[in-house]
Image (cartoon, rainbow, N blue to C red; front, side):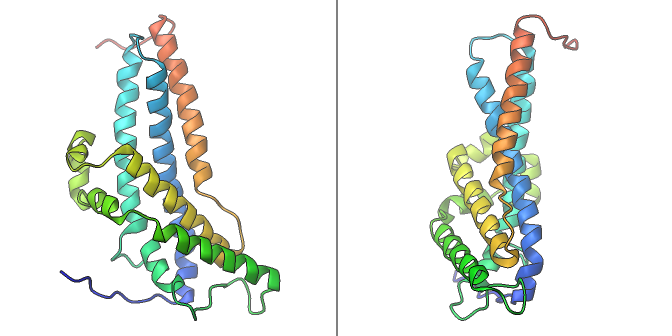
Length: 217
């Protein structure tokens, strides 16, 4: 079935959606960062017997599913507020891409041009076949499945990471293009990864050594 052409947003609409997309992408990035940090802590704790590992695994599964939910929010083709909607505007060669003022400086225009080029480059490299497999669990269905169900559709953690990082880059470049401000969602991913890894590695180690009180099973 052929795709239906969707409306191209105006610069005013793109300017309004940019902060929202940055916030949504930051939440997706943080969820994936938490997953990745817990996953690394579990790998480093192989061979250790601890109830905390079960708790960590539960968090890991919840965070990867939360990542998928939030990816839908930023990449849904039919949503009025999405990176795909922003792309339909940005790809127009004659569109005005800077909204920071009526008379932007040459430096601002150059920054905007570089951000636009980077956005389009990253968008062109998105694996939409992989995203399509992820999107098969959209809407209410995703609230009732576990990661093994997603794996049956050949969704891999690495594919999710690639899509998340691409969204981070595009959302950051869109923010730079629209406002001139640097606000990189990927920083949330890296911070969450570090914090989750440190916390759960310490918790699992303490539990394995009997230094962590755990509730009765």
